[in-house]
Length: 174
Image 1 (cartoon, rainbow, N blue to C red):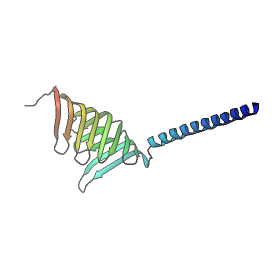
Image 2: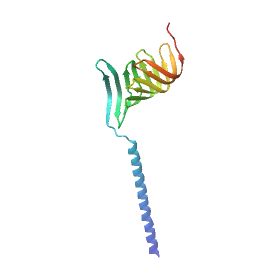
Image 3: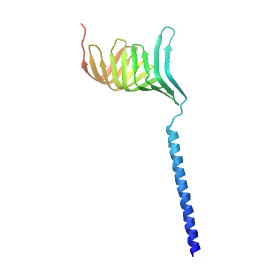
Image 4: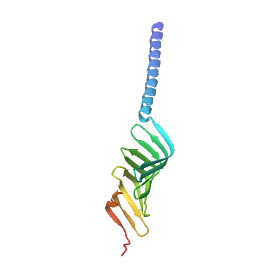
């Protein structure tokens, strides 16, 4: 009888050890899978870059920044600064470039050649259509005016601005 009890106890101990082993091993594999799924493979990385887009007669755009990381189907940019048409500087600490669009976030500032300053939390610059869009609130300041509103659409080529819920102070010239 004692022998049977020892065999049953041994069997349960071995079964318990096997269960513990597979439980720990499967959790480790699960976490490793989860980590690798969240990590994207970096194709290339560029530090302190400067890029130009030119045509036969002029400079169209200039892009400079601290860091650019190419991932599978987009670029992550750090401290990217774009100059295009009548925009002297379009800047934010972080941005993404995908499908000919720059998505700026975290305190975006755009400065026009005439000194007017646009500020927003997020902005999208469409490099094909030459449009600057702020999907959220924005603030514009110049020497004589302060304007705030929502959903700004600024066409750089036509120099046209459209927005919703605009409020501000304007000093008009005679």
